[in-house]
Length: 323
Image 1 (cartoon, rainbow, N blue to C red):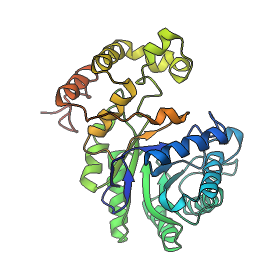
Image 2 (cartoon, rainbow, N blue to C red; image 1 turned 60 degrees about the vertical axis):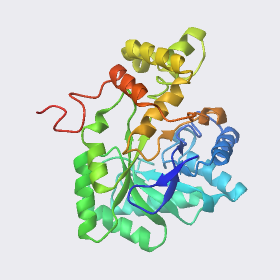
Image 3 (spheres, rainbow, N blue to C red; image 1 turned 30 degrees about the vertical axis):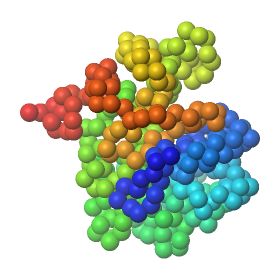
Image 4 (cartoon, rainbow, N blue to C red; image 1 turned 135 degrees about the vertical axis):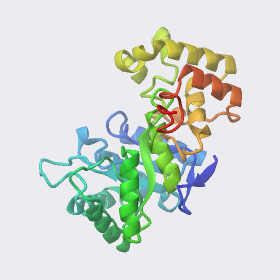
């Protein structure tokens, strides 16, 4: 496993992050612990969750599953633990969003579920257009000073949100945003327009989620032909069919390389200079075994750009659409 710094911080994280959205929703506690064990054995130290994950079976179920694993294994000190806050957690109108009240209360609830004294990366799961950055940073300063969080990250924020948030943090002499978790993969390259350039300018690490586009980039067409059950078949009408022609070329290229499509898709993300660690969402321990033997060559990267072209003229905004 390779390691890098998270954004402009001194925190060392693995080049792959273990996402846990499936915990409680798709897999039970025993299987989730097996996934965590496999990630730990591979050297993955960044574990990402959210207070809302697993809510169909109870609020914070994913966090509770992780908390049980940490308590059982004693791996807390070697784990960089990330969680998120924003989504409604009850019918209470104040039990949602990014108000100072909800941020502090949600952090304390996550700490209880995770059975830990601190959260390494506390992430704003979505933009809250009704709450000012001044209020958000006031709450984050409180939590930092109390020793309950170490760093603050965002998710699903636009480039200008990152700029506004960081400017507000600097006015308060706060470290500010150190990471942005954004939907980014070969099929979804919108982040290249403004989010990635803003993050690079501000020293914010990029944690791409949905790196396989809900399984479409994991060999979906082959799995369909072979009748393999899973998310690639379940989501075929909206995740696969609109991209069938490109996916056919992609899977042919992977076959010629002798590599699994998932490994190539992850390898492409790892080749992007702004990317810190793709967030994988495994349902089995074996799905974590996606590392390439060697980085993708310039020729392969060019072929991928041809199959999955960037938006507009390519590159960041405004060059993507302007001269």
